Image: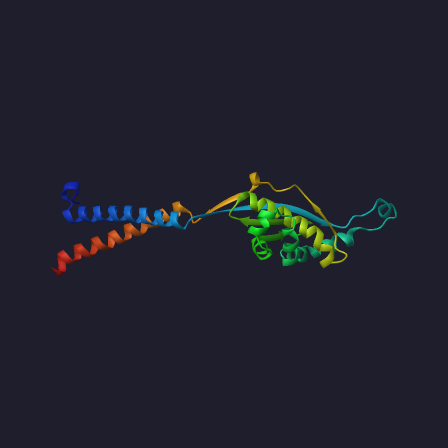
Length: 211
């Protein structure tokens, strides 16, 4: 079997390789610049609350079974999360913000920034707020938790008590930057290389068969 050396490769191969490398670099740089232009950073703050009925020692001493009450609270958790995302809570939460933040965020904006969710068989509800500022996210999620604590008894009479857990701070926020610049660069390199290969193939085919 004949062995080929690098010097045996024709000039068309080297030209094609050079074109492919150049277009891959251009593609990577171009997509990197596009990602940088489109890139934005958001900050998500989170605060947890527990919603449950208080069982007095007297009731326990009398042998009252607390299981039905706990089951009721568990079944209501999805409803409570919907209430936490309601505009009524956002209006109440806005009152706990500074005057400066009240001018910056309307009740509608706060409502859009809030996401509340629960897990199966848990009395803990997590409230998350995402904005473009770490301090704002922390302040709003704390305000929403307080607003929810105040408004839930009005919306759902007989609901369990809302107990607020640790306050959110700007140091605890989750930072999310999109789009991912590295992924864009990788896609740009791949597309550039693909275009280079196609161009090289067309040039070689033209020279050999069509010229």
